[in-house]
Amino acid sequence: MTGTRAAVITGGSRGIGRAVADKLAREGVAVAITYAASPDAANGAAQAIRQAGGTAVAISTDVSDADQVRALFDRAEAELGGIDIVVTAAGMIRPVALAQATDQDFSDHIEINLRARSTPRARRPAASATVDASSRSPAPRWL
Image 1 (tube, rainbow, N blue to C red):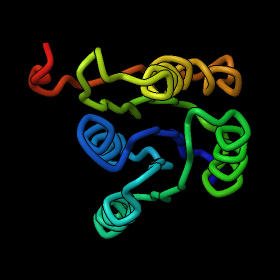
Image 2 (cartoon, rainbow, N blue to C red):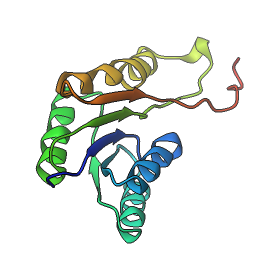
Image 3 (tube, one colour):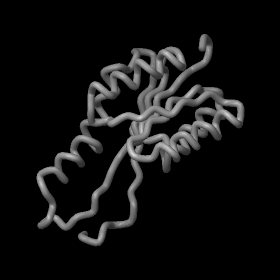
Image 4 (cartoon, helix red, strand yellow):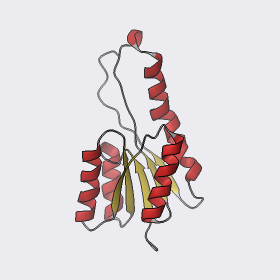
């Protein structure tokens, strides 16, 4: 897609990621929306963007897996051209009382909410922009 800017938006199927995908698409940016557990939401978001005249693709990606992130960028670049913008909006919360939290609970939070934010930077071109976004749900009952 020569001449068109393109963005990868992790967590682009809902919340802040969806709002960013919609806004960028309205501005003429082709978007790759990633999802881990909500294919219907991601495909619906991509379809809505296409119906409005934009360019969008939904790509299943576990952002905590570096190999899947590399595959994401390979596919996004093949379908949309060079990636100019990276928005990392994927995140997770698993409300659990601290006393009952397992090592896996901690690992999942670190992998998705922290490490996954740095993985896409390895593929970021020098002339691109990277934005990290997150939202906060109401205070969990264990706080």
